[in-house]
Amino acid sequence: MTDNKRVTNKQILDKINDLKVGDEGLNALAIKIVSRMVKLKSMEDWFDHVNRADIAGAVAYKDLNLTEEEEALGEAAKLMTLMNLFQEDEEYEKCAIIKGRMAQVNKILKKGKK
Image (cartoon, rainbow, N blue to C red; front, side, top):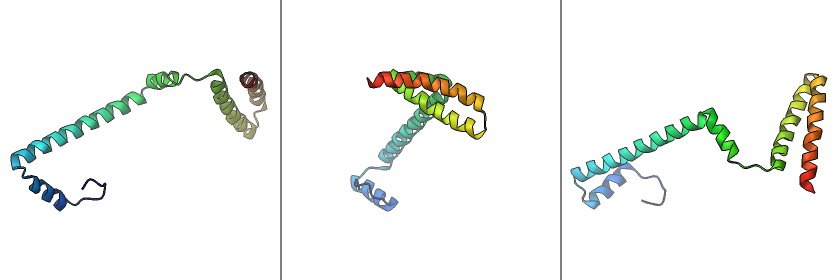
């Protein structure tokens, strides 16, 4: 029954009967199982709540300890996306600003390759 295959209720009941667990023992086992499931669900809800908080994202991002080159790569990806958006909208003034920032990022990336 421990090979991760589907198990029927009858198989479970047969196994419990083989163990000769009385109703009292079965009830105690059920209470323990439900208690653990509730604790796990509570922990999952708490974790989801904490992760949705703005400060959690900022703290987690700081924990990445990105190098200057990794930060620059991320910035370059963002700038290229913005450049594509602005080109499609024919906002060439914004493209010029992005181009200037991209030159700064490229200097950082070239410095990292040396």
